[in-house]
Each structure stands twice: as C-alpha cells, then as structure tokens.
Image (cartoon, rainbow, N blue to C red; front, side, top):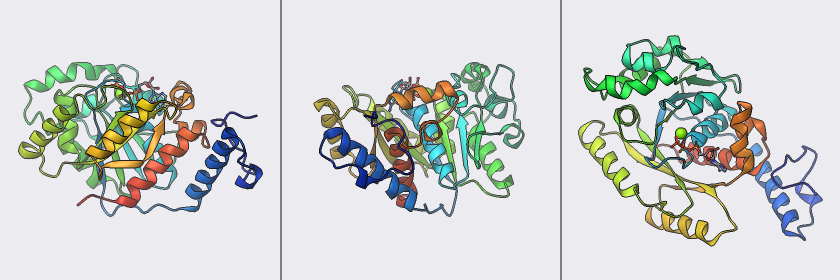
Length: 307
Ligand code: ATP
Ligand code: MG
C-alpha cells in the first residue's frame, strides 16, 4: 500500500478507493482535493499584493511558506517575486538561485542602491517566478543600515521603482524575514501592504504573538499606514496530537477572519524538498503538503485584499 504522501498517479481517481480503511480514506481525500484544485482557475489581483512573511519566533515555517506559497501561486499562473531578506539565504537555496558570497543580491539593493531589476533572478522551477537572492553579505546590513539615510524605507523605495519598471507586472511579492525584529524586518514591513504570520501548531505558539502584533501596529502608525495583518497560516500541523488541534482552535478563536481554512501538515516531503533545490509543489505535486500550499494560495487569491 502506498503511503498517503507519495504521489498519486494521474489515472487514479477517487472511485478506486472504497474508503473502508483510514489509509484508503486519506488517499481518497487527497484525490478529491487534487481534483478540486485542478478544476479551479485563480483570480489575479488588480494591483500587486506585497506580503511580508513574519514571525520573530525561529523555525515556525516562514521560509517554507514563502517558497511553497510562491511556487503554488506561480503554478496557478501568477507572476511572483520572492525577496529573500534573511542572511541565512534559505529561500534562495530552496528556489535554486545562485547566492554564493559576492553574488549580486538584496544586500546591494538595500545598502549600495543597486537596481533591483539588474539583480533579480528567474527561478528555474516555474515560469513567472522571480527571486531577489540573499547572500551572507546581508549579515552585516543590519549594522550598516543604522547610520544610513531613510534606513527603514530602503527596500520599499527600490521595490516600488522595480514594480514600475516591470512591463508585464508582478501579481505577488513575498518577502522572507529573519527571525528577529531588526532593521531588515522593519524594511520588509515598510515595503509590504500585508503581513502573513505562519504559526506553528505547537506549545508556545501564541507566546510572542502579542509582541509581534504590537510592533506591527507601531509600524502602521509611524511608518506604513497601509500595513495590515491579512493572513495567518497554521503550519506543521500534526493531526494525531490533541495539542495541535487545541492550538489551531485557539488561534482560530483569536483571529477568526485572518486564519486560512487551509492548514499545512507536518510532512517529511515538505522538509526534504529544499535539499533537492525545489519547492514541494514541484518536488511532489500530489503530496498532502503540496496540496495544502496550493489550497492556501487559492484561498489567498480568492479572498483578495482585505478591507
Ligand atoms: P527561521 O526563523 O530560522 O528563518 P523559519 O521560520 O523560516 O525559520 P523554516 O526554515 O521554514 O522556518 O522551517 C524550519 C524547519 O522546519 C525546516 O527544517 C523546515 O524544513 C521544517 N519544516 C517547515 N515546515 C514544515 C512542515 N510543514 N513539515 C515538516 N517540516 C517542516
Ligand atoms: Mg527562515
């Protein structure tokens, strides 16, 4: 019997599973979800939507969400720019773009006033997916920015120039932030119109969240009145544990409008995809992790910009 996370062949269909065992039911469910997704076309936004994916807690799935959501959106036909604003450069690795030390990167854009247009790379994975890579050079930017003019607005300014220059237009920009609230993250908040907060379905999930929301409010008040927490995504959900269900219920009770229906499961496929320089959306398209990110992308596209 196949593991439910393994690919389901195209000729398989829901009718082949009688639903008599939990595994068969799970497989039938995957097939049904895939059919629903493939039947739908997603609306494109009228104006570029700029998301910063942020949570000062480390390892909650920020980068994984940036990589897979951008891949899912690009797969659905949107034009997507990923800005890797984390000196770790994990999003650049997962999206398979050059980011060795010295490669022209987001550091040159923020610190040296380089044109974004000259530095953005095309991801080999999907048509319409572009990446502004991060290299280790970015590690020094946090300190270099301190004494610079308009230090909080540098990313916002170069991004808006870039968006005016691209003839075909960009539908979504996703910014991957480091797990801290320093000047790089502030630059991301100032450049964005929406914040997407990934929340790991584990103990302590809500701890630190009120601090994050307070910081976002401060940015909104003083630096970027357009900024709004539009989206919360539950990640690393392990449906077998009561704790995961409790955390999910808790977060939904606090943020009924923002939390997406789609939930990202804890999945080996998701965690191993980056080592192949791929998103899970192309690494194992029909796995539950990939389907979940495509469902999240569909929901974001259909909901549109919050009022
Ligand atoms: P950092 O704060 O260091 O930037 P992050 O918030 O960007 O971390 P990720 O790097 O996306 O978090 O994820 C942390 C680890 O958890 C990675 O090893 C990643 O592969 C793994 N991971 C993320 N999401 C999942 C998932 N749904 N299932 C299994 N593993 C996951
Ligand atoms: Mg990260």
